[in-house]
Image 1 (cartoon, helix red, strand yellow):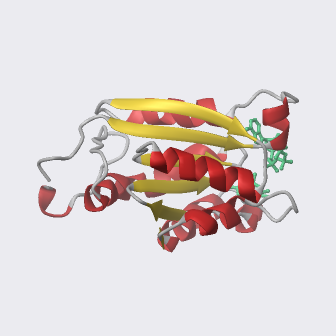
Image 2 (spheres, rainbow, N blue to C red):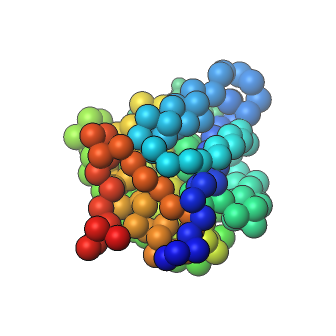
Length: 180
Ligand SMILES: Nc1ncnc2c1ncn2[C@@H]1O[C@H](COP(=O)(O)OP(=O)(O)OP(=O)(O)O)[C@@H](O)[C@H]1O
Ligand SMILES: Nc1nc2c(c(=O)[nH]1)N[C@H]1C(S)=C(S)[C@@H](COP(=O)(O)O)O[C@H]1N2
């Protein structure tokens, strides 16, 4: 993988009617960015976005971010059972492949903290060379969920032909078979 881009392009999308309208301050986007800056040691460009709930708007944003060459797209919010929670449907609309294990493992970790974690339909998927990971809207879910799955993210990006990510092994020990 000698041609791998060494600066990862990362997009963070907060999906929330109330954060998008300014009714409350978005804590999810800054929380996800702070988590990444703690854990990722390799160069990265991070862009944050706040959009309202809704299948078409979320799908359009995901298409745009994939088209721009995002390596990793973290989406927070809109994964639950309420009528306006349509993030998983938007992911289905745009994905080439689903990585269902991400959702299973994130829910398993969250269920150790809160029984309503089972209400999140969060998942991960690939569109073009972008890895999309969806997280629940509650900002406290971000660390729980990313801690549960992030060890597999760098190698996933390698396999997809996306940018390279290195992590601080004291925080997340990225697993690359044969130490690649
Ligand atoms: N981006 C965010 N920033 C700060 N707090 C949030 C954010 N998203 C959710 N929360 C908090 O987590 C709680 C549960 O999130 P949930 O997704 O259910 O919000 P919601 O009721 O669907 O409303 P909305 O989609 O407008 O944020 C909310 O009541 C809110 O306090
Ligand atoms: N770790 C964690 N997971 C969680 C939660 C939480 O507080 N922490 N909230 C749950 C609840 S109450 C809901 S409704 C779903 C969906 O949230 P969302 O619609 O904001 O994405 O996430 C669930 N997963």
